[in-house]
Image (cartoon, rainbow, N blue to C red; front, side, top):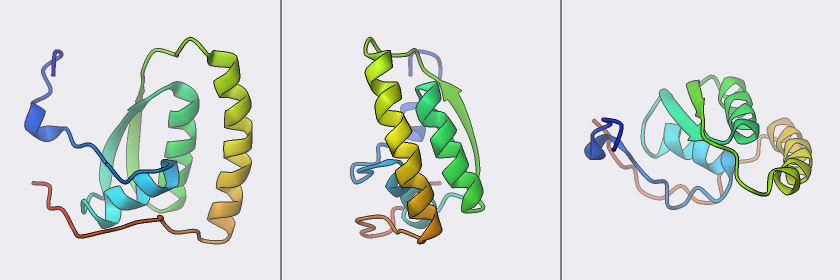
Length: 103
């Protein structure tokens, strides 16, 4: 908002329990076939990989890294392995809920 993005164009996914859920919910609940992800670089790489695998057009902007960079990177290694299994076995989001129209 401070950088000029209108508040009514920013949506929080309150049921995006993990990256796969957020990507699938953005497509299936919020009805978006293209969107922007803003997160840390290591997370954006995974989000874009999932989106590409699911045929979704996404771009990402990297936010500043947090203080616990090394802890996040070790967690990220396991998250990427899990992501590959999720995609291999066509894992779905934990919760979809009602459709929310974004205009």
